[in-house]
Length: 116
Image (cartoon, rainbow, N blue to C red; front, side, top):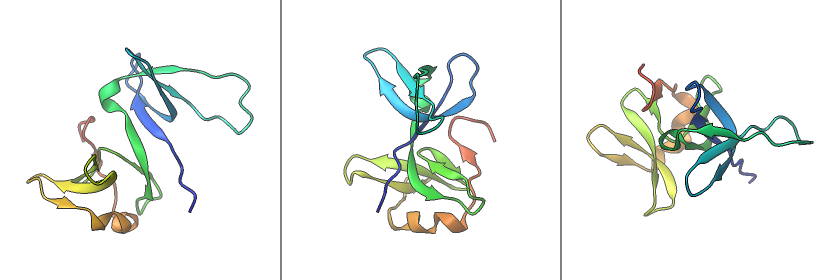
C-alpha cells in the first residue's frame, strides 16, 4: 500500500488553506507546496501551527481529501498518540476507530478552524 504524506495549514498572511510538505523549526511551521515532481526551487509558506493537519489517506464521497481536524456533521477526525492512528471523535468524546473506512460514503462538513 502506498501512503501519501501530505499536510494542510492556514497561511499566516491571509488565512487561506495550503497543502504540501511540512517543515518545522523551533519557532515556525512552513508548508512547501507540491507543484510537480521536478521541483526546481522550494517555496516555504508560513502557516499557523495550530491549523496544521495531516492527510488521513481517505477521501469523502465528493472526492475531497480528508485531513486531521475535518468534521463530518457530529464527528471530527483526530490523532491518537496512544494508538498511533487517526479516528473519529464525537462531541461527547466517544471514539470510533473502526469508522475511517466509511469516510468515502460521508461528506466533510467543515473543520474545527473555519466557521461553517
